[in-house]
Each structure stands twice: as structure tokens, then as C-alpha cells.
Image 1 (cartoon, rainbow, N blue to C red):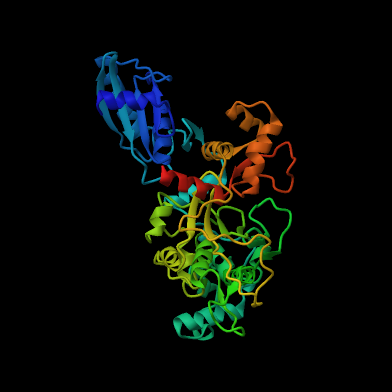
Image 2 (cartoon, rainbow, N blue to C red):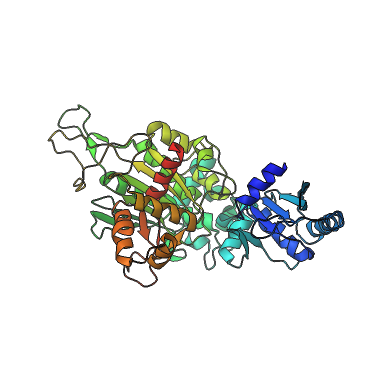
Length: 494
């Protein structure tokens, strides 16, 4: 790193990838900083720099002491050990030690007291949530949600007809003549431990899986307009059952709430679905198979006048990005479940689902939301092709859909106040009206609501965190998938 690069970096201030320290004297404190970086994508620690970004500098003796302290902290005070790289940069004020901590491959990294640290903004925090710890162990391949036993279940809860049909079809022999008990069969297939079903066995073959895991269902709503906070709806359904039953029910819900178009066919033909079924099928299966089952939340399907959103609990695992999955890269979050699902659902397990959906219908935005711990597929609807004939479809939306280009615009245009609001929420995650006024340096609550919040809500770019109580004193606002897609579009333009 050159002196120019150093000065440019510290001038930008601290963030999740850059931390400044005047000096370090404690191995445990240094270990906590390195563990946080290793657990959070890696970063740089600058020793000899004040918190305000001014250069304090170190002398030769201090550099030698810090190198010894650093080696001790990295090898003895972090578990498993980390392997930082150091570089000494000479400045007019003295030496600055630049420590690069790479993204860890063996997460989670713990300090000497067994605590897990992660970066939060320019600071770090101690991980205490069980679900967050589970996700970290999941990313490291130490535990998978789909093989966690489900307390209170047994082989008696299996749907015999569904399981027998699957076993016979896949293995070419009757389960009755395999010579094994049902418990042994389930254990050999990785669907139980010989006593209880695991989550994969429950979600694939149990009768009424929601008896034990009520959140693992699909909630579907069709709205007449384009805003999530609309109190009106055209259709609504909570879709329960096994993954196959949820897939069939969710697919039927989407199909009955989209248009069928004739494309020049005769009056008596049913017509084709306005969005290719292949695209919807692939995205729906992807949500069911790859969702984060450590997160107690439901898959959401929202059909709007201009788009369909499929929102899956859990952001993309590990270092996977939306661009990666567009190119067919995949990481199996639930390997046992996907192994069996590939013989039950229209799922191939080769990373080809998203590219196939995009090939069939390019107007799809993929939005990863680590802050909200969710992943969304936004499928933009085409302009309805009406010929004055009645086709086999539900009542069309109140507002006619708009034909989007490959990266669809938001209509009406986003005003500068709304754009500022979206930028703030992208940085902060969630903000209340009071917090927004503070960030915007505005005092008038009504002005902020009229010119910032209400237009963004109406355009479906933000949503309430407590949708059932719009006037709650605890109410905050966050970006929707459409809002994140709009920001991505602007970033590409920039």
C-alpha cells in the first residue's frame, strides 16, 4: 500500500471493512477485532491511526512489539487461528501497520473466551442469538437445518402412501419387501435418526408438517394495485402441507391470479399464461428448497398489478451473490432435502434453475437482502393483451400492468425526496419517522410523511415493519424487493 493509497483510505473513515486504532496493548482485544473481520467477509485494521482518521504513527520499537502481539493473538487467542497479512507504511508522522484479515473459511471464529464476534457498521458486536449462531455453523458446513431432529415426531407421522410411492419409484422395489422397518428405512435415507423425523423427512413426507413447524408454509396474497400496504386484496391463501403440496398450491394460486392471453389463438382456446410457467416453476421450487429453515418465517408470494414477488426467508448463503446464481453457481443450504426433492419436485439441483427462468423470462430482478435476512425474486408482468374476449382467468387487476424492459422502471418516476429516503434505508435497514427526520435534518413530521414516506409506500418501494398497525409508535419503514431492485438499477446506470 502506498502512502497515497493509505491517505485516501483513512480519509474515507471507518466502516465494516476498515478499522482504525491508535495502538494495541491487549491480545484479547486484538483477537476480537480479527475474529469479527474473519466472520464478516474480511477487512483491514490500521494501527497508528486515530479514530478521526488522522495519522498518529508508530516508532520502530512499537512496530516490533505489535508484530509479536499480533502473532500471539492470531494463533493463540482466536479459534481456529487466523492468518493476517501485515504491511508497514512509512508516513511523516511515523509508521502505520496495515493488517489485512481475510474472509474466514472456517467460520465461526471465536475469541479466547469462546465468544463469536461480527462486524456491525464500523464497530463489532457479540453474537448471542441462537438463530444467528445456527446460520454461521450452517455456512461453515458444521450443521444443516434439514437434518435437525423434530422433537415429538416419529415414523408413525409419515404419510405411508406418499412415502411408499416415492420409494418404489426411485429405488425400483417395494418398501414392504426391503427387509427393513420404516424407522430403519427413514434413517438409511437420511430422513430420521431411527426415532424422530428430521426436518427433511417432516417437510417431504409427514402428514400435516405444520403441526410441528407452523411457520413453514406459503402465504400468498393478490393485490389490485402495486403497493404492499394496500388494505384491499383480490385473493388470499395460506398454503400448507408437504413441499409438494405447497408447490402445487402456490403454483395454482399464481396461475389463477395472472392473465391468460390468446396470442392470436381462437376464441375457444384457454390461452397462454402471461408469464411463462417455466420461469414461475423454477423460482417457486428454488424458494421452497433453498430457503433458510433455521429462520421461523413463511415464504411470501405477492401478486401485484405490475409484478409477482416470491420472498424466501434467508439471504444468499456464504459469499454467493445474485450475479453468481444468474450464472448458475449454487450452494446447497439443505443438501439432504434437495437430494430427495429432486425426485419429487421439478428440481434438478445443478444450479440451472435460475438461468432457465431468466432464459424463459428475462424481466426478473433477484434481490438479496442480508439485513432483512431474505431473498426475493421480482417477476415483472407484461402488458395484458386484451382482445375484448373473455378468457379463463380471474378478474384482472384494477390498474393495467405496464410492460417493463429487461430492468423495469418504477412508475411513476421516483422523486428526489423518495430517492433520498431509499438511499437512507439501504444504509440503515429500518428507520422510524423520527429517525428519518433526524437523518434528513428536517423537523416537520407531516412534511416527511407527505413528500417522503407516503409516495414511497404508494409506489411499493418501502413497507411497514408492523403492517397490521400503521400508526404504532414502534412503526418503522424498510425497503421492499421493488425498492432494492430500483436502487440496483440506478447503481448500474451510475
